[in-house]
Length: 82
Figure (cartoon, rainbow, N blue to C red):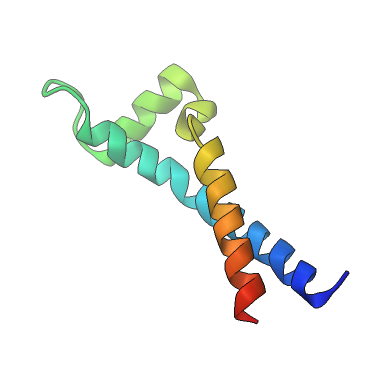
């Protein structure tokens, strides 16, 4: 594997890890922002609600597009920066 390919793969893995680690927090934030006035308040209450009603997959709903984009963006960035 050439150095450019290795950098591309390393960047893609880093980008994917970045998206996967932050996406659940973003999901909670967006749900809190779009909740109705009578909904439970606070991040932990929102997290408990998601986990109780949707399980862990609820935290990652819609992650595919940002995951692919983040992996590609970071992969190309690593490849051209070295």
